[in-house]
Picture 1 (spheres, protein in one colour):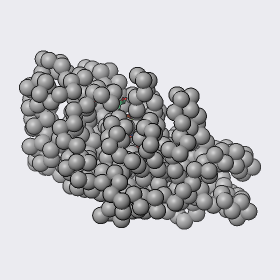
Picture 2 (cartoon, helix red, strand yellow):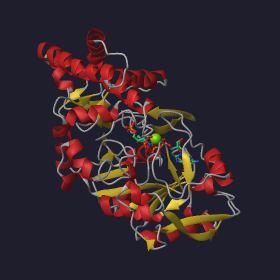
Picture 3 (cartoon, helix red, strand yellow):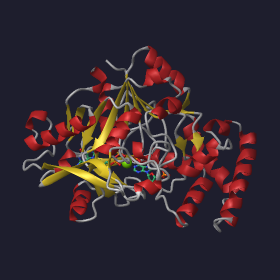
Picture 4 (cartoon, protein in one colour):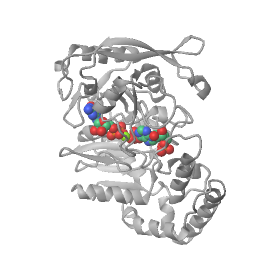
Length: 431
Ligand code: GDP
Ligand code: IMO
Ligand code: MG
């Protein structure tokens, strides 16, 4: 039995983590977000309505569960208030269901302005424009402001003024953009933070106590492994550690306690929003079909997601750097009716040499060609099937082949967007 499971994405994000966290929350007492910010868009479904969560953990639909925003998460107070209001409009109360670490750093308006200014200039990353990169830069540069700093208003005001002046210089003189007003920023923070500060708790103490008592905890990852600042397709990545290494530092819990089982969420094909290498990308009608069927449009930005075949070279890198214990395979239903399904098993480099590792430099990514194995598709439907035995034979063959190529078992298969459209072959909490 594991009392802690980490649920994280093994591709480029949007693998369906929100749905799976919501599904597994039934077996948990705590759900913890430990990195990233409102760049995440995690979809959960309540009474057939889609709710997209950005900073709040995906266990929020369940009563009797404490959802925790831990120290590694970046908070935009304005965006968090918007999210809370949206939940209220769906009749979801967060009272007693949400706790926030006072050590979370703030995403401030100048971070968003810098993100926008950079994306408007050359060399776009294709960010979500939420100010994530600039906010993490301030944290690492040791000039960031935390939620706890708001509790000491006099020094907060002075530091806020200093940091805004510092960044306005860059905005005006380098990006030729408008400056950010100190007074407006301060007023926004004061007006939004009252509700948020009421939710502050010593979350690492709560979690350590939960682990002492062997209570079940889910650690919910955002983005995906290939967007990890260290392990991903740099520089086309986000600015945090999306891999399992980030769980401990982002939650304040020792690695041996928080990583009982690591469930890698993997889409049955690949998608990516934003720029950067994507060897298996499909540009023609098959890609268009998958995008339409899978409704592959960004949950945060609405941008069409780039679509391609599954890439086992990349997944094997994810298995290694996360210590993946098992997979959850999502959106298998989107492949219903495909005549043939391709799996990328290796790459060919510019000299024609076959390689089974992802390149580490942008230059080396340039002439990478995928090498495919082709499997037959299936005639029946996977959509909404809730029992493994009723899956079409070829769908089982596809799942088995992924297991063979990665050496990792598939514990959960997702066959539709709703919680109920799931096959739990083995429950990661009970193995
Ligand atoms: P996340 O960021 O990893 O939580 O994923 P997103 O919520 O951004 O994107 C996943 C999308 O796929 C959402 O619209 C989900 O409702 C949907 N989804 C999740 N699992 C499945 C599935 O098994 N089948 C289908 N058809 N849709 C799914
Ligand atoms: P979830 O949690 C997919 C991508 C952006 C961009 C890069 C950097 O829903 O899976 P950022 O705004 O973080 O500086 O952007 O990372 N990105 C995501 N792509 N899903 C996400 O989150 C993402 N969060 C960031 O598109 O390419
Ligand atoms: Mg998403």
